Length: 220
Image 1: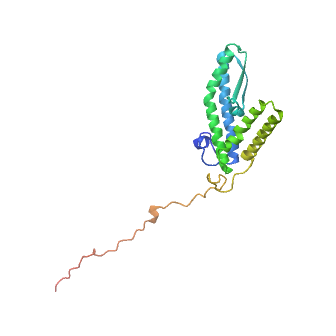
Image 2: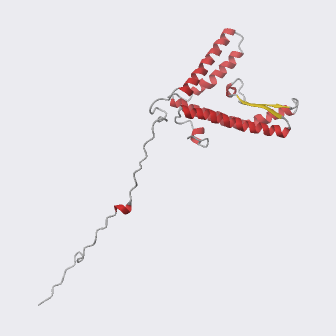
């Protein structure tokens, strides 16, 4: 079972992971970031005496124009002229380390999943950054046909990425990025190790003169 304390699983861009591990990565990584930022939001709310209305995660904001934090919190009862902006600023500043962790975690696990599909890690840009950028560009274009075309391309890339990363099995057997994560493990040798005591053979010593010794005969 993969653990969130496994540094290779969290941060390495080498090797391959299967669909199940990728699903686990998305769920566990999102839950971790959401819990940490929720604790931070309620801590700030308690310190400033305001309520926390909601905490949400929107990963696509990472690749928007301009990019922004993917975790958002709304506070109730804060003065919009004083404490409100201050709480938001503190929340965003404290969320930067979580943002870096989440982005690295997403990129590392997605790259390993792409490797499982025998694709280069740069496909991460195609499936994550490109659709969001195209969507942002299309929303700012006045030409309706061009905007709709860009939006359609963004939707196609999104669907393609979901199918490729979440549903399709990796290449069977080893590929250029490593061994098949679904291949059966080598059987463990359960034979007992060499026992020195059982291998020692004791040969009883035969009585007799030592080598090179001669028996002296008596004289009549």
